[in-house]
Image (cartoon, rainbow, N blue to C red; front, side, top):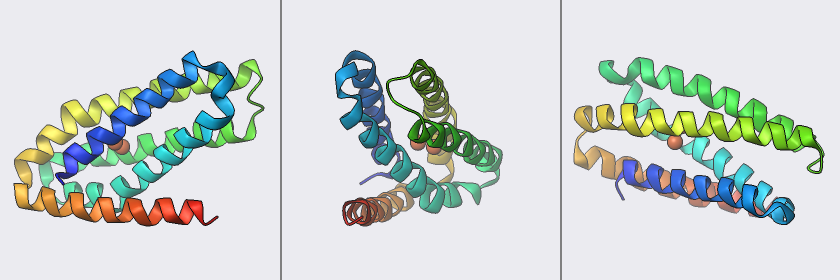
Length: 147
Ligand SMILES: [Fe+2]
Ligand SMILES: [Fe+2]
């Protein structure tokens, strides 16, 4: 599987969970852990596999560093949400901030980073990265389930 396609599929999935969270307020208790898990696993496969491969190429290095910083901020808001009572207005406000941060970050990846990565990595390299990320996702999902 092509690495960029895999990451874009994840982005779509996350976007869908955000809109479900907004539209089905009664399902927060089930939807939020799903969002939490998807974002955490996605960040992990990018940080461990995709970003290091992209960082090696000069045209994408700064974008990767910025992306890592954005992940750090997203994880901080996510941690706040985990600690806050879901029934509060504070939680809803934090969720909104998280969504804005994630959408901004996804926009930069899809419009800026991915097109540049496509220029510096071959199709074969992208396939290989995609395969490795798929494998890592399976491992991470299993680790979460076994918890
Ligand atoms: Fe990212
Ligand atoms: Fe991403």
